[in-house]
Every structure is written in structure tokens, then in C-alpha cells.
Image (tube, rainbow, N blue to C red; front, side):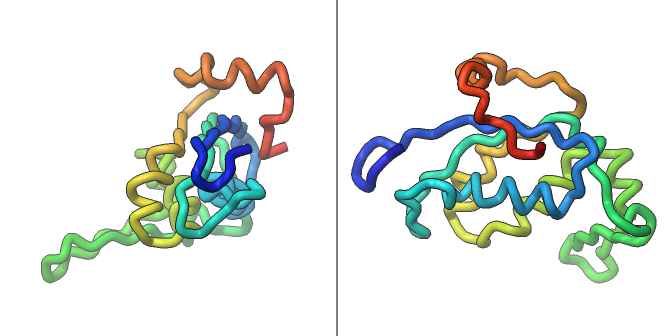
Length: 147
């Protein structure tokens, strides 16, 4: 672990999102990005870890959220509101569903935008380019969050 004033040691966490509920999975990943699982956690410090999530297209919603949940964004111009249903977002960019859920659980400050967002890696399918970083985790077998 790292201590205040020392070099921050960042671990890599691997998550398989197959069959996981979006909100429950996001609630597990967000504290890891913040570093709340470390004994040296401070709310004003950047001590979070890296998180690699695969199979993001296989997440699930409960109830009728695939058809009823709306993702909204506004261009800032009059009449610029755009709405998409969750199933349409899944067809276009499956990573955005989980990314929006995770980032919605983080405070909107410079730590989120500058440090936490770049350490979240979401991938469609089981393949990802972080095999070298996660190789050390497989030998310790303490990397799984979603199971």
C-alpha cells in the first residue's frame, strides 16, 4: 500500500461484466477508481486504481429499463435536446451505458475529470490490450470484482 507523501502504488483490477446489473457493477467499480478500498484514502488525493472491464455489451438492466430508460444530452441551443433509449445506446456504443453509470457515482471535480476517468478502461468483447498489466494479478488471483 501507499502512504501519504510516498509514491502511490496503483493496482490493476479486472472485471467481467457478463450478466451483471449495471448499477450494482458501477457501485463496485466507482470506489476502486477513487481509492476508497485503501487504508490511506483521502478525499482530496488521487490514489485510485486502474479498472479494466470486458464484455460491457452483456450488462443487464432490471425491469423494462432497456425500452424505458432515456439517455439525454443537450447541445446548448434551443431545441437541442437529444434523447436515446438504452437499447439504442447499447447498439451504438455499449461502453457508454456503463461509463455513464460509473461516472455518475463519482464527484464532479478535477479528480474525476483528470485522474479517475482515464483509469477506467471499458471494452466490448473479451479481448483487451492490458494483458501485460494484468499478468501479475492472475498469479495472485485477487483481481476479480464482479463475481
